[in-house]
Length: 126
Image (cartoon, rainbow, N blue to C red; front, side):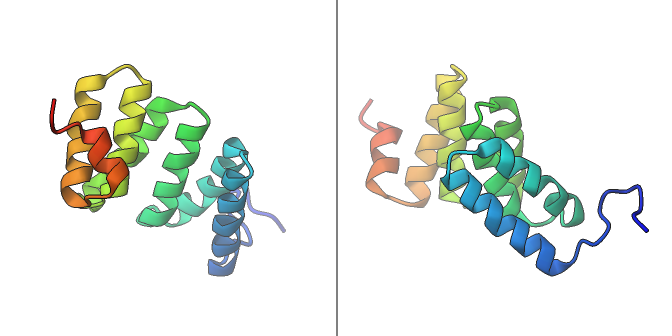
């Protein structure tokens, strides 16, 4: 009989399946569908940084910038050396019209990982 919590039948396998399906939905440009799949995964495993990073990317793709900012922030609290999370947070700030905050995170991303796109975005020469 179903419970009212909404998490009935959730297993580690269900969470993995939902995570992988969310990746596919995001790749297929359905970020809102990805968020819906990830919400119960994160509710069951709030410590799962990979799921949070994927949800942050989905929020960004759905133009839910405040939610993306918060989720990227959680990832960076746990993994302050995550260059991709810094870069993605910078893009979020850039889209939100907050260039000073964006610049700081672009530079952190480039300092952590000198990928050409990170270094170019960091604009160290300016």
